[in-house]
Each structure stands twice: as C-alpha cells, then as structure tokens.
Length: 313
Length: 313
Image 1 (cartoon, rainbow over the protein chains, first blue to last red):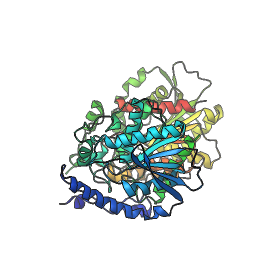
Image 2 (cartoon, rainbow over the protein chains, first blue to last red):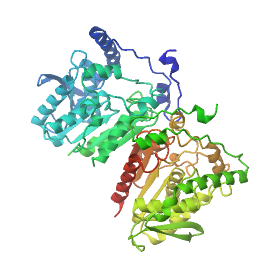
Image 3 (cartoon, rainbow over the protein chains, first blue to last red):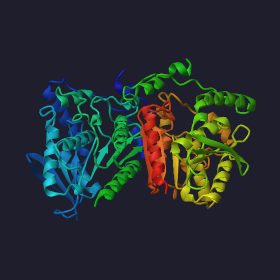
Image 4 (cartoon, each protein chain N blue to C red):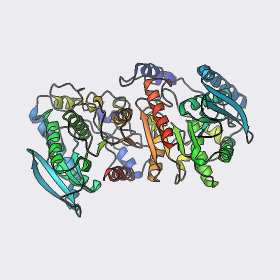
C-alpha cells in the first residue's frame, strides 16, 4: 500500500470550510534521491521550487520594492514596503524555509517580499547556500555573515530575526552562534513551526505522522544537510542548545504539525531559562498552516504582527 | 478486541524516564452505566473516588490547615498554607475536576490543600453538587454562589479562579455567568487541560484518542451532566461563549492531551478578543499530565505559579 493510501483523511468540524478542504487532501508520498546522487537532488529541488514559485506569482504585485544585494558575498534580497523609510527603523532578517535544501533564489525573493508586507519592516531575505553542493555549515555561515553586516548598520534593538520550518532551524542556530561569537542579541526572534531537531526525537514525529498532511520525516534530507556532522549538535539542532540569554521569542505551530514537539519543547526550554517566550498553536493545523489565507492562518499572522509591533522601540 | 489491546504504546525518548514509564501503561478501558442507572453511576463514582483518594494520602501531611465551611449552602474547604495570613491577601477559588461527576468530598478536600500549597494562597475548594442526582445547572450555580460570597470579603483584584479538566469547564463557565450577571472579573483565571467543549468537536478528540493514556471520550458523562440541556450552550461549553472582557488567563495542555484542541481553541479565542492569555503545552503529556511529580509536571507547576505571582498585587 502506498503512503498516500495509508494516510487517514479525518477532517474536523472545528475549522473553517477552506481549512477543511485543505485537510481533505492527503499528503503526497515523498521519495528522495540517493544520498550521493547530486544531479537527482538538484532535479528534485528544481521541480519543487518551480511548483512553489507558481503559488507566489502575486508577490510581484505587492507594494514592496525588492533590491538584490551582495552582503559579504551572500545574495540577499532587501524588501522595503512602500512608505517605510530606508535609512532607519527596524529590519527583519528573514531566513527562508524549504527543508534546508529548497526555496532559494526566486522563491526566497518572493517570500522576502511577503515577509516585508506582513512584518511592516524592511526585510532582508538571506539566499543562503544549500546542500547538496553546499552542506552544513555553509548556510549557517551565510546567515551569521549577514547578521554581522546588519549589526554594522543597525542597533541590535532594531534587528529582528525569524524563519519558518528550516528557516526556524537556521534562525535559532544563528542566535546560538551569535551568543558563542559574542555578538549582541536582536530585539526578538520568530520561530514558525521550526525544524529545531534534526534527530526527529519529538513525540509528534510519531503521533502526528498520519495527520500532518504537509510534512513527513525529513531524515534523508537532514543527513544530506549535515554531511556527516552530528545531527544533535546545537548548531544543527538548536533545540539542544543552551538557550540562556535568548531574545524574546514567538513560537508558532499547529495541533497536527509534525514539528509540534519541536515547538513546545523549545518553548519549555526558553521558559525554563527565564526567556520571554510565547507559544501559539493553531487548531488542526499541519506544518506551516493551511493555505496561508484561511481565517486561521490570518489570525496567527495577526498574532505574529502584534508580537513584532510590541518589540519595536 | 478490547480497547486496551488496541491502544498503541509508543513511548518517546523526549521525556524523563518516569514520564516514559507512565506513558508505557495503556489507558484502562472505560465503561459507563446506563443513563438512568443512578445507583450504577453512584457505585462507579464511589469506586473511582476511592482509588483516587488513596493517591492523596500525603495531602493530610501538608503544612496547610483545612477548614470545612458552609458558604451559601455549598460545602467549601478553606485551605490556608502555614504562614499565610487569614484576613487579607489573595484567595484562589479552586474548582475540582473529575468529569463533572467525580472527585468531590474527601478528594476535593485533599486537592484543595494541594492547590493551596502550589498557589501559595488561601484556597477555597468548592464541593459543588454533581450528577447523577444534581445535574446541570446545580454545580455551576454552586460555583457562582461561592464566587459571590468571595466578592463580599475580597476585592476582585485579590480573587483568582481556576480548575483542571471538568474544573476548567466550571471555572470558565463561572466567568461567563459572572459577566452575564454583572459581577466583576477576578484578577486572573487558570485553565488546566480544560473540558471546555462538551460536544467534543475539537480535532484532538480524534487525533489523540489513541495516544492519550489517561482519557477517552466522556460523551456519556457529558449527557448525564447536561440532563437534556444543549451541550453547546456557553454555560455548558464555554469554548463557545463570547469571551470579551475575560481576565488574564493561563492555559495548559499536552501534545497527547485529548483536550489539546479545547485548550488551543480557547487560547485563540481569548487572544482574538484581546485578552492577555498564555499557552503552555507539555511534550508528550496526556490529559492532566504525568504522575504530577515528574520534572515535566513540576516545570509546568512552576510556570503556573509564576503566572499567579505575576498577577498578585
């Protein structure tokens, strides 16, 4: 029996009609190329990116200007919402998702523009290097390099860092690296359904496997990214880092999210370390939410925006 | 096949050894008497209460004095931790759990003493009337009556209201009733894995059914409690109430909790109404936590205490 046929389609009455339609579609079966099949990976990545990019066609219509820049050798998209001054005010450092191997280039450019709109801030989208050609630590090095450049032009109190899924991995790992390298902390951190544990040890990797219609295990990809490094190292799995001194953190997940355990475990760790951390969980939401524009998605987007606004000075 | 045999026992590595031992024990199969078998219900309730009471034998050893009082005709246990003054300071109105039919009398007396210890406040434990002899609205009427008496002797800013499971139902319903009756709001509300939806419409009633080792559906009991009233009425299922003007609220659940949906849905509703509400979710925790004294249980107890302390004046 294929994975698609095994996935039960149970749709609750407790969410909007559009969310229910989304949940009625079972997860597509995933298959990955062999570890050393670089061309196979690149083909797979290109196909997924192309499908995702088609969903962001409207991003070009947003009232946002996007500039392609080279920041310390790292391609970075600088998106500025109309009416927001360029020379001052907060900057959001946005680290894109995509399982640490996808959603760079034009997808990253589009999602950076979207983040600028939803955050209301100038947004720097880091088009970090990725596996298979550039495994760990290339991507994290790129994020740290861009963060260092940001510190040259803004007070830390004007810098926000965030990411969704794999972007949440790199955003949290960036904070751990910044701490280790003696860099100041940003004003706040946003972790959306974050991939904080590449060992996939959390309980919901098991309990939500049949219910998350978006995501299954990423272990094959995690190994490709780690390229022999220890998956449990705090730079690869920041869930296991010492989180003392982390900035105020917003964490978001869903009851069906494969990464729900990642999210609540990090929330508990942050709270145990005395960090101002808030948790928001969407009813019946799989990994990264529903369509992005259901009432439930928009409710959480508004919550995230309130968090950012509250931490602006 | 019995329910016991069907329940999968999957134990994650992401929690303490004692939590894992707790999760390794499958849920006992539950069977309920026929709706009109009053004696059958009373026998069942007495057996469960007796088993639960044996776990609280040490409550009598706590440095807490407990006084049995009659408050507006409602038996209420007034528990005062040693060293806490009797005449002033905050009072916690504690509404016991037990599926709206159990855990009254000596169990309520013991849990009231425990709440006094963990809250550090004088605690009033309401031994409200219950089904089968006293279905809705008797229990809620009792809680409202005791709240009214509390308002006679304390400023609302010195009153806290809370409950776990069925106690979370009555605590939230009490707030809704108090609003409707023009009574002032307490300083804060605590909802532990709350039974806020007697229609059981949330997604985790389905998705966590095989994983919550403590709780299965309570629909038979809900009907007994409702005695023909609409299960979806906001006084019976406060999840569906207008929550405008609710006090600051602490909500707690677990990723395996059958009531996780209840908890996160209420959190979203409160936040959408602009209420200061915080959500805490324990990794792999079933309904009402593990043994009560695992590191994970104690972490969340400490979080709850911090919330209470922050809202004391």
